[in-house]
Amino acid sequence: QSALTQPRSVSGSPGQSVTISCTGTSSDVGGYNYVSWYQQHPGKAPKLMIYDVSKRPSGVPDRFSGSKSGNTASLTISGLQAEDEADYYCCSYAGSWVFGGGTKLTVL
Amino acid sequence: QVTLRESGPALVKPTQTLTLTCTFSGFSLSTSGMCVSWIRQPPGKALEWLALIDWDDDKYYSTSLKTRLTISKDTSKNQVVLTMTNMDPVDTATYYCARTSCPFGAFDIWGQGTMVTVSS
Image (cartoon, rainbow over all chains, first blue to last red; front, top):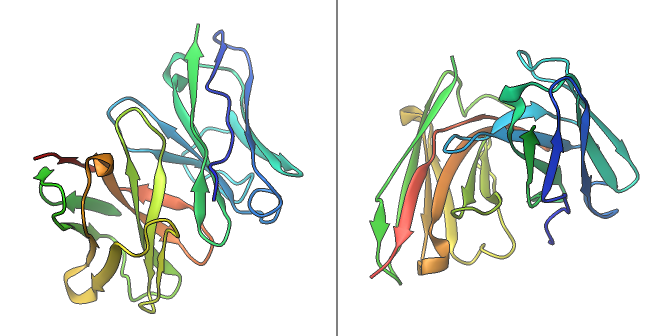
């Protein structure tokens, strides 16, 4: 399976909103409602931020939201904060699990 | 509180077999719907799912690595073990174990990871 396609980097100023896209195929993102998103700070383990396309685990701020349209999933972060600066990875079930290449979010 | 911790050698030689252990607490791998996965991340690169074992001892592997991987569990010790044969320098990575909500779910709790370097 090929990795899901994410932009290498996105940026935004504090208080703004940013959206990270995750493009796959009908065999992964488009075929299942099992897309998840992970936040990873440097030197740390990934943290689950969104699962099942749009559900938030307990403790994740509601500034983080997920959606999907066709073969593309999206993570939107509203009200950007400095602590949101991190790498973000999408993941989809596809018979097994496939990750995206990761997106570096910079808070300007 | 759910925790997972990976352990294993920091350095292995090419062609050797790597054995990693994930020791967890706060949940039972004999509970229906519970699974544990192994995921790795080469330095500066993306995450890659490797293998999963479920509560019923069913095992699933990455298509590209399945001939080299074996996952097993010891429910009484709360441990999951991953072996990877014929190690190569390209296998240098941080290896994570993560609790997974089966059958299709997300990796909701991760261990801190263990860095493995493959070098002679």
